[in-house]
Image 1 (cartoon, helix red, strand yellow):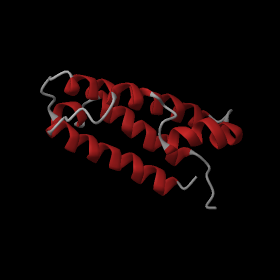
Image 2: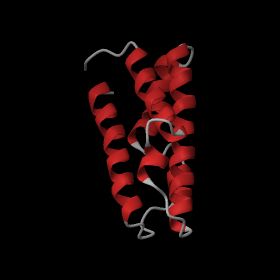
Image 3: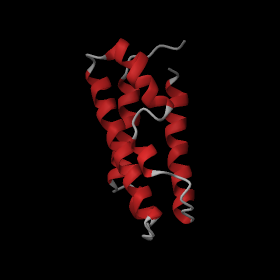
Length: 117
C-alpha cells in the first residue's frame, strides 16, 4: 500500500463529503458508507494489511479508527439525507467525532512500518 495515496484518498473523502453536505442529493448511501471494506483502505486492511500486520498495535488502532471513521461519515450522511441541515463546520470540524476518527486513521497509517513498493 502506498501510504501517501491512502492519506490523500482519505483527505479527498472529507472534501467530497463537505461538498455533499452543501447539497445532499441522496447520491451517497449511508449503508454503503458504513461498510468498512467499501473503500481501498478498507480492502487493504482486510487483505494484505491483516496478513502483514495483524499483531501490530498501530494496525489494530488503524482498524478501529477506520471503522469509527466510516461510522461517523455514515451517520452524517444519514442525517443529511433525512433532511437535517448538517453544518460542515460542526459535522466535519476540528472538534467533531468525524475529525477525531479521521485524524486517528492518518496517525495510525503513519505509525505503520510500511516500505515503499
